[in-house]
Image (cartoon, rainbow, N blue to C red; front, side, top):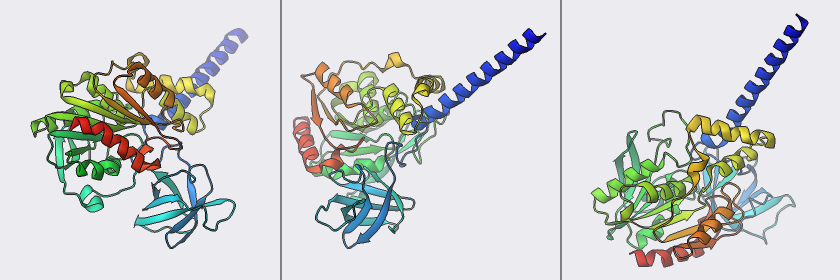
Length: 371
């Protein structure tokens, strides 16, 4: 009887431990699979506003607040745009002063918690940039997908797709540049975004199912006059572009790909986001298995089909979400098709923000033959 009771107790403990491990793995996987659009990724630190003055803002001193370039600065109910660090401005040892370009909405007060975001513009292309645009609805697999269309003269359209932690507003960073070169631009909101259909499981599949919404946008573009397509994606939006280039029935219409901080391994990105949420390393394999179980993602399915069109990749070694080494590997595997533009001191999906002029010059050189 004692042996039976001891065995039963051991089994109960083992089952409880197993259930706890499964729950912990499920919780850890949620860092990526339930990341809401427009909210900071766990790799992005919260900063504190210490002071504001005419054209200046003092923020917590951190590697993030010392980044070069131009960024959105978001808080709960506020958005501003900050420019370069003002090294000559008076500041304390624990603060950094950056140029305050503008406050888009809300207010910034000392003590406010804020974070840097690649989204410099808010609103829509007409309000934010003065560009004529139309709000269009694209018939998608799960329902109607809202999109912005900025018309222009060329019959090569650019379809822009945001990624983790951002919204279609991210596309406005380069929209003015593209419109100035007469490329029509279609900026897509896809499943899980505000105003778009919600996937049945409520989860982000890191581009592996979302690419079908990009495919719907491609069909829309061709239906309304596009002869050729350039797919421009950030983060998991870049993953969607790669999947569409390999799987879409309209892949022969794609004349080029522009990939910013591409997620080339969902497993590596999931691990990175879970780690940023302080998940113990021992639980990371459980997080991967939980993600597979919840979404059907397959590690073997991560292998990319060979590229067949010119591809421009913007990426850098400071990306903590999508490993830079994988972009280098992609470039090495396709030396005649891939141009890899290294960007230092830029976080995930913020390669333009670090140096807009250099980014746009590289984009100009790439896009000119595709006109």
